[in-house]
Image (cartoon, rainbow, N blue to C red; front, top):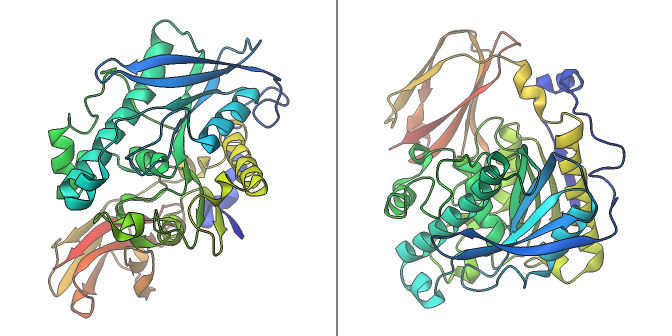
Length: 400
């Protein structure tokens, strides 16, 4: 097993200068409450979807973080009551002072998903729509009846297996413009970027993602200083690929990229994250191994506590950025970079985060990339600047 805490880039030394939230002693990092009350509520009237909401008994704190988790089941099975990992996390985090929820979401049919990649994508997009409605449910409540007393600045989302895939896309897709055509088309057919599962008019902004054996359709969805995440994955996972591949042992022909592919991209983009990598382990090993589960729980507790109470990941606000233009894009044999401030270096990374071209000592506001030496596809261009107060800038580049 490998463990990594990564909060990268030269500015990380400024982390201690960010504002630190004041959390009551023992709250969020220990089980202050011995019992929890669970209630079942309907969060989507549109599709009659329910969630189990966990609250610590006797808690009077007025602004509590909320953690929304989705169950596994390959988008064809499972429910809010059946995923032991999700339910145990909900119970433990509620005892630490959170409001937690285990949600149901719409499911698909394996035969249809295996026969038609469009149907597989539509199934996941519908689940994403439902997951967003669950976020809006708590935001709406905070703005109206305030039944749950949640702090909408501290909304954590995630899940186990398919549930993690669902909320990884909620966390890392910021607009429909960022989506490739196959996803944008499916979203347009299912209510648009925010979906059609209800609680309209409220934000789906979240604090961080809890990714237990989840994945993204493309690592290019991760951008510089993107959403913090806590991650766990087995390297021999045949259900959700540890690297990039087709899930369910290749039965469903839609690409998913797991932690093996995401880890270097997180690093390249200075994403604050914790990761546990289980060498040789198959899918969700923590679901059947108490020691592994306790390790994942402990990592998640520390990660969330740091974000709520210590100002972790706030370093990005200590820097300025500058304008970068890349043209033509898509590019043929070459592409030009033009910046408002002199560059120090230009790096070209492939979708796995591997540097395939590097130029140091540029010291100019213009640079020409010889793209003829690279195979066609999608790349990441990372530009750093002579002025150390300027953040690196990451742009996408397509080579035809």
